[in-house]
Amino acid sequence: MAESTIADADAAGTPPVARSSISQAPPVAVVDGWEVSQRTSDAVLTLSDESALAKVVVHGPEAGAFAGAMGVAFGRATRRDDGVLVVGSSPGEWLLIGAPGTGAALEAAVAAGVDPAGDPAGDFVTMVDITHGRALIRLTGAAAPSLMAKICAVDLDDRVTPNATALRTSVAKLVTDVVRDDRPDGTRSYLLHCDRSSGQVLFDAVLDAGIEHGIDIAGFTAR
Image 1 (cartoon, rainbow, N blue to C red):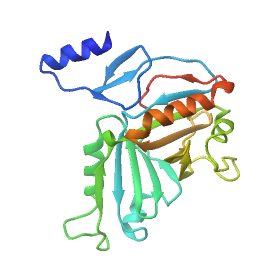
Image 2: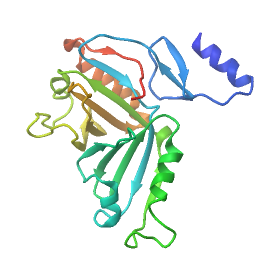
Image 3: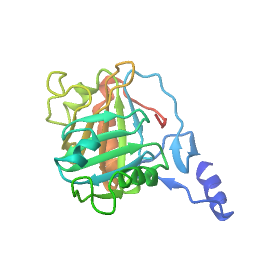
Image 4: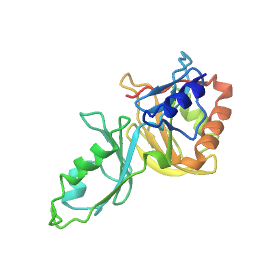
């Protein structure tokens, strides 16, 4: 029914609907221009597709005024007051994750900090909106580290990878950015970010690894 409704809307000349590379668990609706699952779950371990979130990658000098303005070092992440998550994904590279449809605004905010002369400090900065080219899923629950241990070799113990840790590694044999982004109540939560073409494979691998923990699919909620 959802697919039919979307097709009819497109034929009527309304804006196109964006779709993740990951199949959406019913019920499905269009929210902020994206087809998303609205499934609810009270499971202690959940997996959700959050590919609808805006994703902008920024490249610039790994040290200096611009890096300082980004406010987060390589291997770390921070959530700004406006809700945008800033991830130091590699030296001289940052990933900005914001609400659906805010990619242009995220780019504009970065551009506003670099004037035409290249300041601050002559930094050369580039940015690309990769929202539609990447998949983003969220794994939430106390059992998340146990699940991840089955498909990822990184030690996710608190002493090694505390909250706000960011790293790029292999998850289910796929190159994946892993960002620990715990819920406000302290519940363990991870964002897994990979190429769009690998999104469904990664999603299914995490689901399979979580069967023994009672994992369930939860719908998208823009946080």
